[in-house]
Image 1 (cartoon, rainbow, N blue to C red):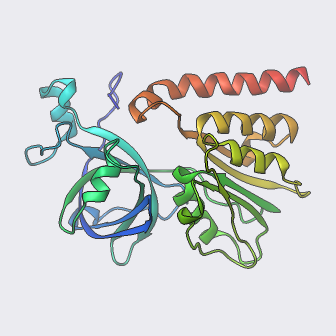
Image 2 (tube, rainbow, N blue to C red):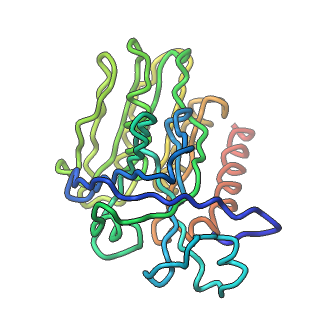
Image 3 (cartoon, rainbow, N blue to C red):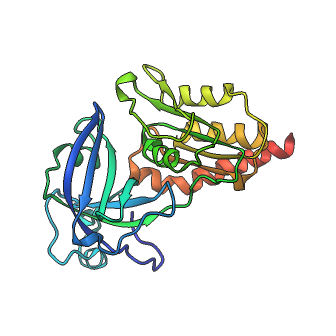
Length: 283
């Protein structure tokens, strides 16, 4: 994403691929390590994310890799391609960073890279960012998302208190895309199989049909933007959940790559929030 108005270029870290594992037909796990992670940390939030930096032409940039210098000296078409991915796991002792990639064939940048990755391959990234972790004081938790939110939901499940109550909905293409997830106590996810339905339809239906428990809920709802917009209206207007109890955002939007979605995201979110607040006032 292009820098604007004097924003600082992200600091780029160099990581090396340690291991690659195919979790499901369309989910690839890449474990990164190397000296570039010496002062990295991602223990605070369960939705920590990093910005992966891929060469625009598929080649390599001269060392030392410097995003600011590249943007100053190279035409925009040569700038690194940035893609956002959730930190699935950070092992501070081993200094290993795990990232899960959704892979849909040759389309896109990050998925094909992960499918071809081999131990020793290098990858530059910046970050981490993040803002959400399950509130241990909540009476119950709602975790809902599609494949793009699955790593963050899995990390959140691992962080829940042992006696936590939670409703967890994860939408995937079919049963082959389900994963075995760790969670405390009796919490187990409900897997929703999309089949031929559009993205987000099974997820929105499941959350709408949920018999909401009483008490203070802490919710994490992320995925396709159209689905998230519908669920924002449901949770804010119909269920009356305050914004401070919600982490809710579109991770991606049907028909747009990340560059297109990031360009439109701020306006999309603003319009969605105004729509939600306007409906609340009318009600």
